[in-house]
Amino acid sequence: MPETINGVRFYTLKETASLLKVSYLTAWKYVVDGKIEAVFIGGRYWISEDAIKQFLINQSTKRRFSHGREK
Image 1: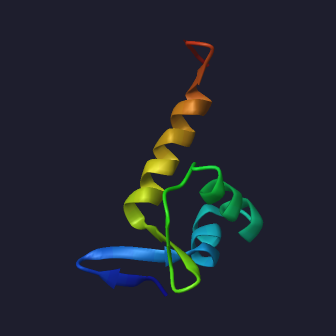
Image 2: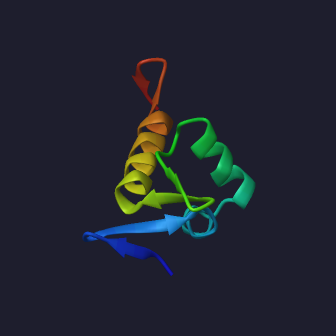
Image 3: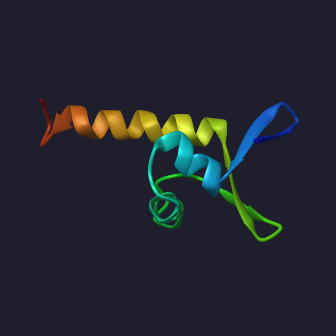
């Protein structure tokens, strides 16, 4: 279950992987590669709801455009 801090919802890596329908390892790679912004607190990565939304926007934009042309 996500944690809410100051009105911002944060998800663990496991929860994020589930939301994105990818494996835990894939979600971890997204964080390590900087594709998803996360904070590391208490031995865990925490990903904000906004960071997940931004990742999804970035992914849909990459799929839509290829070499400057719309697919």
